[in-house]
Image (cartoon, rainbow, N blue to C red; front, side, top):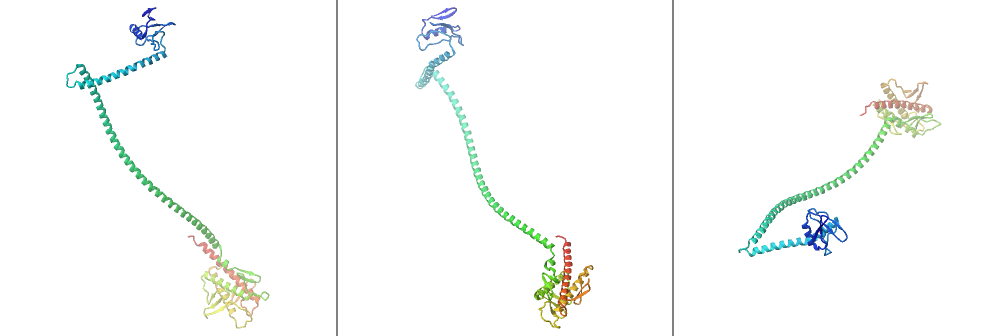
Length: 410
């Protein structure tokens, strides 16, 4: 039983089971309930809906209200109640399902026959619910079909894009192969051209070196006097020399006639070169340089006068060698006169006339003939002849160098 104590409802200790607690909560919904135990009596707070919260003992057949519920106890109570409620909910669902099946069976049974209003009402409700569900399902089906059509169109578009992409990839692959082939061809050609360029550069450098060497040689040759380099006139004691060949002989120094003849050949070649350089043509005579057998041709008589001797005893009527030396002296005189025409200030150191050569400083004359003449006089006359040639050589060389310097560079 429930009784009040101190203004609060009380529960009799003899109250047993959950039915007693339910009656207590239903009887006092808006008031707090005190639950007594043997140990203590406590007060439980009011629930959110106005009813008192109580604890149901599962393990004991006698349950009593003893103390206020803590948070953990509330959770435990909630779990217990949930476990007790779940079977009821499942049972309720099973009954609803059984009812639907029973209504359908009744509808089939009562089809074409009179039936009760309650059954018709249930069938009508179920049909309305099925129609609503059918409309929803049809609407969902239409939406799904529309979505399917849209997806199929999108799939077709994607397939077209895939085919186009595959074609583009194939085209790019072919283009890549073509570019790879062209690249390989380019590198082969580049390597070939690079090798040819290296060879060309080497050849160009070689040609440049040859050109520099040739230019240096040309500059050296331009500075070189051709006549001085070809005809070196000097002296050796009492002898005049040309290219180291002595011209003349002495009793104490009997020069071999082969050397004398070679010296006359060099002297004839020099006078011929000087006359050609000046465009001079000798009158009455023509010099023919022929080594150690050179000679002078008399133009009027068409005969040759030898400029070489063989030595030995000579008779008074054998005068060809002396005539040749006199003719050579006449040609040298013509060369002197030609030079003086162009340069009045030029003059040879020794005067020449009628087979004799005169030392102007002393007034002594020396015959160029070997007959009726001493070897000393003859050798001195030949030395003076070479001296005059050296002077003429120097003048022509100076004119030659001057002409070269006046030529404008191309």
